[in-house]
Length: 307
Ligand code: NAP
Image (cartoon, rainbow, N blue to C red; front, side, top):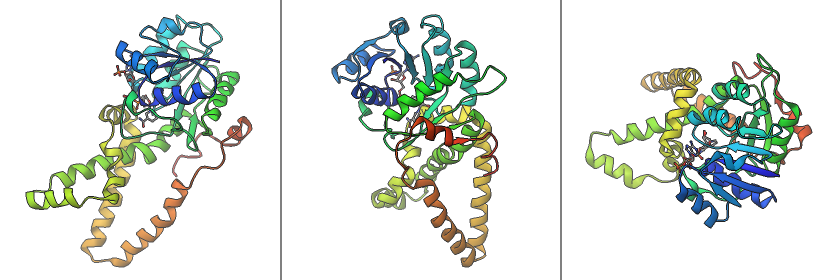
């Protein structure tokens, strides 16, 4: 398949590496000519250009630019691509993207690979980033015509080749769910680093910096990641990020009250419950999926609500 990748950063670069290894012809588009050259030098793409017109002959295009530029890119592509081309994106929010993008291109399929790293840019691209992780497809049913089923199948086929486990859900359920497991953790982790850095005693602060080990490395990783990406999560998924942060604040208040009251039983109860609950989120994904499995993994709209 001839596959276009717009935005040769971390995710676009990783897609290029794996889809090229799977035997596809990869056409990259970057903003800067230096990025094009770097992608060619690293053998991540077969061709690279700064013009979207270079994708005119592609069968599928992945848009891997920052969230704010995804819909404008679909608009420009709609004047360039052949009518059978499938367009998908990898943006970390979906409701703000899928409907307007589908208006520009009926064969648009919203997608979000649940894989990442703290580093940004093409330098951080590597093989196998998506292996074993979830890849969420977010079709819509209304008010536009439903997302084209053949277009969904083509994107799911490619995501399967990345070794991902495929899920389907509505864009709004996606945004609510990822607020809990991705966007809230970024805000909380950022708040953690910010709080530790505001320790007023300089000696203690320096000691904390020196003592920090695996625990702080784990809990600070997403707060120390790409600031542009975190900002766009907050801007484009504002309501769900606010909702999850308010719930988190209640949880913190609950812990503070228990500590002030020396209610060790309440603290132990919560820690025991969260020890068990964590496994539901971080157990390794099962085997890579087939299209049939993806249909079975369809999460009906609203069934996530309230969880
Ligand atoms: P990144 O490493 O910063 O890469 C973004 C790339 O897009 C950069 O190479 C940038 O080019 C390029 N770009 C920006 N505007 C462009 C335009 N108008 N035309 C062509 N290229 C353009 O960011 P990323 O982490 O890969 O994120 C990209 C997308 O993936 C975002 O939508 C994000 O929500 C999604 N995503 C990210 C993660 C993650 O953990 N990082 C995970 C899943 C999904 P320059 O090099 O010239 O600046």
